[in-house]
Length: 371
Image (cartoon, rainbow, N blue to C red; front, side):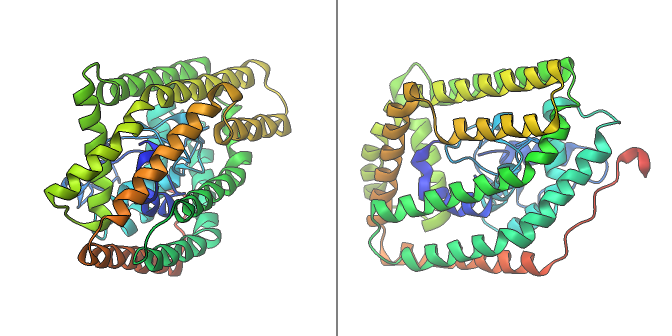
């Protein structure tokens, strides 16, 4: 999703960390998988499609992206995949947030396997790494997520300013950054085991995701392009605030224009990140450097992802500013009833987050062969 969803998806971002991917179609594919993977009881209520910004992602990412994209990208890294899992659950608008997190280890493994076709030799270490990550995240980041949700619940009653939106954006980026840092040692181990065929599969998945993105958000028809972005924006707006009147939707549609104008630039950034990720992964596979060097490469990739190079900086800033302006506009045209709906929604997520904090982390899921 674009930055246009900014704070409207901050619930998903913060919860996911906390930000872009596997929503309805991801759940549906997961539900179709054999063995122990459960169907999503809120599947029909979930919205959207698979998005961006982990496999042990440079998206070995378990979290959601600071600059989220529509279809999951391996480059956003394991740490952001959790955000994706949580973001997908949040979009169910029911108690599925807890279910998504509780099944997060299985969802994360499924996602990684979908991108690289995990081998029998890689599977045990991959599952153990995922379990470690979730155990850490439950203890280290869920309390911070709960605090941010409390802030959002309080702020939603007030007039919203660009500074408020930027605060939540920065906070979610910091959560994603620390998640990525935590996951890097296991990501490095995983990358050192990848084969040329697995990297080729990853590239193919990128290409498939990009084709879907172009079809939906880069339609040659300007009206259809704007409609697709408007639908995505309203998906998040309704999640937080409930229904909108025709007059409100008309006002929001006007504000979507600047976001649509930046679509080509956002797509170019997306492709550039993917190319950098593949370049790094190929280097690791070909040279088999020491683990410490791989960790350093991952750290540099993280900086690339969060601080795009100068050639993309202007479009990045324009996209971000347009998203913030849209978020502020939507928040400030809501009625008292819609603000109450938003507070109730945030409180539900707060309650679910505290419930998850009280639960014990899952042990590593055994492979089907071991059962």
